[in-house]
Each structure stands twice: as structure tokens, then as C-alpha cells.
Amino acid sequence: MGFFAGVLAGLLCLSCGGKQPQQTKLVWWQFWTDTAIKPTVQEIVRDFETQHPGVAVELVDLTWADGHDKISIAFSSGTGPDVIELGSDWVPEYSSTGHLLDLTASADSVKPNFFMWKPGQYEGKTYAFPWILGTRVLFVNPSLLTRAGYPAEFVPGNWDELLEASKKINDLDGNAFGFGCNAAERHRLYKKFLPFLWANGGDILSPDGKTCLLGSVQAIAALEYYLKLCHTGLTDTQRRLEDAFLEGKIGFIISGDWLLKRLAAEKPDFPFVTAVIPGPNGPGASFAGGEYLAVNAKSAHSQLALELIRHLCLPENQLRFCLQNRSANPSSRKAAADSALLAQPHFDTFIKQLASSKTPPVHPQWVYIEDKLEKGIEAALYEVKTPQQAFTDAAREIQELLDQ
Image (cartoon, rainbow, N blue to C red; front, side, top):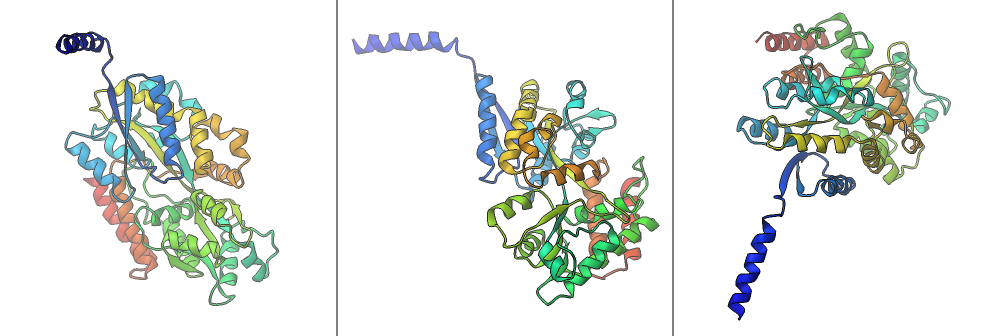
């Protein structure tokens, strides 16, 4: 009796099993591993799975320390995920080699709804959607300014005022520093210098991307000014600079919205102010970057991968992400204009700064150009070379890359 019952049950299972849709797995490589935001990412993904029965999304975590290398290896071996989160300056590298799916047709109809498409484009085509953007602003410690003789409401409006205030704070005592200057840190140092380069009318490459401009008068003068600022304060890693700012030891530091999270959590015993980074004669520029979402050209599920990207970029999902993560710059214009986001303290400074921020050149060799640029800044910062020597040499090396 048990035998026939088992056979019948098996037949029924086969009959039912033939009608069950086969599960499709989408793989997404992403960088948001912090326990404060990862659950929100997972919730947004679960919503997508609910709306797409039979689809399972596998999240694979990357780190900024080695993520670029892992992505490059995967592409070189013909493997890789369906959806990839990329740093904004990585898109041209992978789109130029044919590793990213052309999303132009899908992007054109929604372009007015999002900020900052340029980093996701290459040679007139779109290969990645902007997702979570970011810029850097000036964080100010008014308590140190007051001790240096400034009124509490003072915020430097130009380069001269920033340099003078940094000097006065640095002269207070041995435990106060004017400006927080980044030491040699990969992918960080150049982002702190570029606002000064751009505000001074300089640039890294010519508009056609064929000529390096670091040897220009404007570029060298910007580096000379940046070094003067660095000499009025503390030179250290980004994390240690932020530690010192939280301890009330630094007057001015350039940082991103992640520092707002630390300030809210650690509650320093001084009020702080955020301001647009000053330029030579008024408000200046800043570095703009962000996270971009692309589809592997070899994905077997490219349409589903694109649908996942659209889901992640929905205004309500970007807003949910940004409010949880205290991210001030969603790519969605609708999310950026939401009253819940605008009500967050200091977010208005980041929104203002983004309007005057720039992105690095869209060039397939950017990762290697960036390395030459950072080494040039580093050589001048540690006085191995003069600013003119450092940028003359960097310009020559970058030009060699461009001419290949």
C-alpha cells in the first residue's frame, strides 16, 4: 500500500512540477556593506522579487579597496554578474572595451528625470544609470574661529579668507589645526585637490580628451595654493582627519555626507557649520561622483537586469535609501526635491554644492590618469618636487597614456 501511495505521490509531483516556472537568478555586485544601510538595500531588492515572481536576486558585496580589480578580472575571464555597481569614473573604462550593455534606448526616455548622466556615457552612448550621487563640502568649526578672533557666524567666502582663517587657527596652540589636508590615499587625494583646480580655471584634460593640461599656469597655481592650505594644518588620512574634526581640533575640513552620519552619532561638544567650498573670488567648485548601475554585456538576463536597475532608481526607493543612509544627493530629481529630504540638516548645502560640482574626464584610461595625478600631488605635498616640477612630470606621463 505504501509503495503505490509513493508512486501516486511521485506522479502528482511530476504533474505539478511541470507547471512551476523555473527560477531565474540575477546577480548584483554592489558596495553597500555597512550594517546601517545593507538591510535597506535588501528590502528594496525583496520588493523587486515580490513584483517578479520566480526571480531571485543574489547580492555580492564588494569593497572600494579591491572592487575595481575584481570587476576587471571577472570581465577579462568572461564572467561577472548581471548588474554591476560602478564608481562614476569607471564606466568609460569598461564601456570602451565592450563589457557593458548599451542602454541608450532605455535611458533616453527618462534622462530628464535624473541628474548627472555624463559619467555614464561614452562616445555618445549611455552605458550606466546614475543612482546615488555625492559631492564634498566645507565643514567648519565655529568654536575655533571664535578663539581665533572671528565672529561666530563667519564662513570664508574666498581663497584668501580661507587661508587667513586657517593660519590664525593653526597659530592658536599645539592642539589646534587650521585645515585638514589629505595624505596620500588612493582614490581620495585627487578628489580634495580638484575643487581648487577647477575653481582656478584649470582642468586635467582638454575638452577632446587628447591633451593633458596639468602643466598650465592655472593648474600649478591651484596646487601652490592647496599646499599653502596644507601647511596651515594637519596632513593625515581621511578617517583620522575626520576623527580630529570630531574632537574639535580642526577648523576646516572637506568631506562628504558620510561625515554627517558620524557627527549625528558621536555628537561633538561644539556646533558645526557646512558651507560651499570657496573659490578664488567667491563660491567655488567641488568634486562630484557617485554610484552608477550597469548591465554586463554578457548577461543572459539583460532585460530583467535593466528592470532591476529601474527599480533601484525609482524616486521612492532612492528616497528610502538616502534617508536611511543620510545620503544628500539622490540622482532622481523628484527624490532630491522631496520635502523629507530637504528637511534634513545640512542637506541644502550639499544640494547647492552639487550644482557647481564637476566630474572627472570621461576617459577609458581615467583610472591610470588618476594615479599619475595623485602621485604628482603627493610629490609636491611631501616636497619631493616643486609644484611646477610635479605637474610638469605628471602632465608628461599622462600625455604618454593619451598618445598610446
